[in-house]
Length: 363
Ligand SMILES: [Zn+2]
Image (cartoon, rainbow, N blue to C red; front, side, top):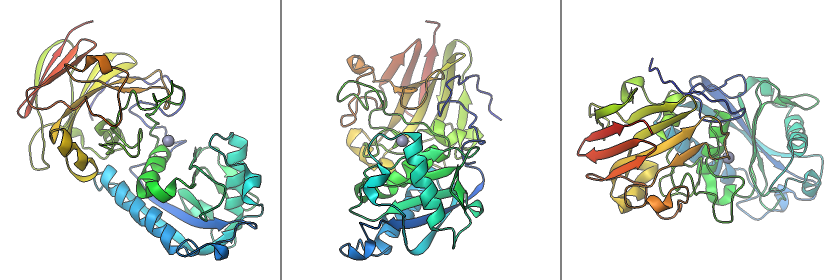
């Protein structure tokens, strides 16, 4: 077991190493999900145009593409199956009556989930499932895809209940499986890395285009290795913790068969730490080819902040310091290539071939 001295004090999904599986799903367990397809009395699937009138289209863009995305972000390690309902269930109220707008209260979300729990109760006992995915017919008034992460206190319908539920909306039609991976990330306990409250255009100023828990359409949407590690997808032997001050050299692994580390953790204060990780132009990150293909990134993690409130901050590399806290998700200035450095808060990292040279000073 890798010992990493870093504490999360933030109350909600955040940067803590240990995921609270009383509320979240256990990423190390076998997980079973149910996906149902719903329409509304005023917006029936049978009235939709093909292919939106059948369930096959939705299965392909969410269940099938979503499992591919989950395999990618978990390095093939997640054990998730999705059972899909055969037909449509009609919700008891018209779509607009649910008021599933961009920002909704818990009560609005819970009322929608409770009805979805009940419409399929003749066919499914949701206690048999860990995760419940609710997919509405195209054209219905459900614009976004919020997620309930409350395993301990599920939403109860009359006959069925769910504490881990994604209610998909219209953004599924262009985000597809990556959206399922983002929302399922929350179900596994991961926070949002974009900013809920920020100046216009500043949503991705801290996370840039890294991790689909930030920007789903980012240039490098694979999950941060710290997230993969705390969910059990990166083995401990790939992780090194540097404690204390001084100069360190860490041999990095850029290919599966290489010996070395892919993630280096640097505790700074009780609730603050840095991580250095290897990133490559492959899989979900293939667009990194445009930015040099092979390198490392440095990010700081703040245990006092929850998801959506800047709990993670990717550091721009040397020469781009003016972009600290002002990253642009469509222009990468954070990818540290061979011979380059990045520095922040007393931590300096230089990539030399396969080696990360790391200097840690007290600030
Ligand atoms: Zn989110």
